[in-house]
Amino acid sequence: MATLIGGIGTSHAPTIGVAWDRGQQKEPLWAPLFDGYVPARQWLDEVRPDLFLIVYNDHVNQFFFDTYPTFALGVGAVHAQADEGWGKRPLPDLPGDPDFAWHLARSLVNDEFDPTICQEMSLDHGVLSFLPLLTDSDWKVPVVPLAVNVIQHPIPTPRRLYRLGAALGKAIASYPKDRRIVVFGTGGLTHQLHGTKFGTHNEAWDNEFMDRLETDPAPLSELSTQDYMERGGTEGVEMIMWLAMRGALGRNVKRVTRNYTAPFTTGYGLLVLET
Amino acid sequence: MDDVISGAYVFTGERSARSYALNKMANSLSTPANRATFQADEAAYMTGLGCSDQQIDLVRRRDWKGMMEHGASIYLLLKIGAAVGVPLPEIGAHTAGITLAEFHARKAH
Image: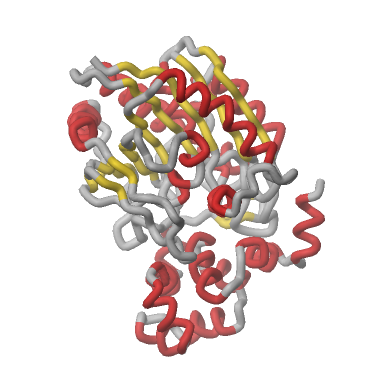
């Protein structure tokens, strides 16, 4: 039987990938971010997961507005890297897990979540910016990606994401093969890219969000999309993907590590929870 | 839900529809070959993909604020920026109506 061993909430950003590729891990501006991932990586080395289920958002790299899915599930054996406009990074394609992914598709649809099923789904910095910080970049752990539209409104509600998390937990619990699974929610934290407040973030709300997500997440799922945008910027709404991660874990969790830093336009958060 | 929140544009479906041709052109810049064709003759490339004279003019003037007001998504402006060598901070500062130095000062707090 599959086991959900924990959850990771993490920000993603193109700049994280650029800094990583340039070897800036120890530079004063970047060390507070990269050092924060070291305990998370140590935990992963100890608990030995063999599957990552990653709830993330695409940034108009795999999908364009001609056909923009609200939820999309990558069921392929391999996930290519998307060219975001700067050319591809020196990373191999990611392995998928079609058997689990098709099980997840059946389980989600049975639970009245209806993702677009993608046999080819290229991944952008929404997954690839943080992943090398947590695992060897020869990608020993397969990834099943679940993309959420948080770009073109209307987008799904915070409550919908929290409930999606519960459905993910149910799908994992009903998977007959022995798999040790970590679920990710990635995005945010607060940032503002559209408009006059470009580059601003909200450190107090970022930290309050991580506090409450750990101990009492349900009320966070009752906030509106507009609440998230007013507190954390129009792009801060990506935080709702953390609700899916937390919703999968159930009531009782133990914190493994947490980190926060905001050197540029985005509040970079990291929260690792064990079941 | 509001279309503008705290001075920020919410990328609604209506906004997406209004700027569709410009966003579609920007989205095509995700291959090296298309970037090279665009760089060789921006206006011809944009015309070929159905962009309006207004959209071509906005790109010619590197009017990032104008492109965003027209409805373009920041994620597509990033692709145009990547093709013409303008990074996010410069685009963002322009859309916010501040200088790059003012943006960096904002981040120092």
